[in-house]
Image (cartoon, rainbow, N blue to C red; front, top):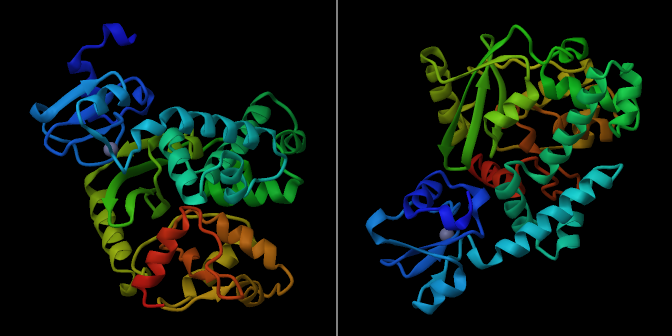
Length: 344
Ligand SMILES: [Zn+2]
């Protein structure tokens, strides 16, 4: 829709659905608070009667409004450029790029860049890179290429890395992965929690995916052939348990069924993670030793990162040997907060 054809009703509808595609097309002034926002601002929606729309930030500022500190409406063009640049870098790179590296290329701090990128694409930079690799692998497979060709085409350095990435992430065996969850019904929901928007998905056997800042699209990517059903009565009961466990992690997670499949090594690592008591942490070296492969420290790290079910398989309880937090798929603030709640 061109700007000229948009009515204020269209603009308000875009604000209500937090439509990122319209960021930069207009700003939303809120007379009562004196600020203006981009359409996708995550803050609570103002009352319609207090809202006036402006063509851009300059027009809003002329009436005395100030830019929102949360959505930084004047940074839209800069954000767009940063995200486009980062996507190009991710696509060109053979190896996964560190968040700090990507942020540095765009001139943002890592946390700010992560937020901007996630707002634009719906995925964190790391999840985006993974999705891209999986998409390329899937495209290559569906072209009828041999699996090994597909692995190399998709930018994996070898079959073991491929299966480590695919098998664990898809929650099923490598051969079943080609079917993308065919025959499975997966109930899912995105719920607000004190840690942010949380995606919970479950098969009839248990939780197969728990993540933050993901939605149906991400789930479809993981299980393209599964039947996805939002909500459901039985699922609602499980969901309630999961939310309670995440909000109060010291209560333990053993009562919640989990449905994951990975390589034997990954499953061993995940079992080991489930044994770490709340309030304690382990290093990657500890985990590698515990599964009987003391030299496989990096592989333990990858298995940790390939965890499909955040929190319930507590990969957040693994930190670096020097005590530093290490990485976390959903951003360090969530890891830090979980550990804090567990009284580390
Ligand atoms: Zn805002």
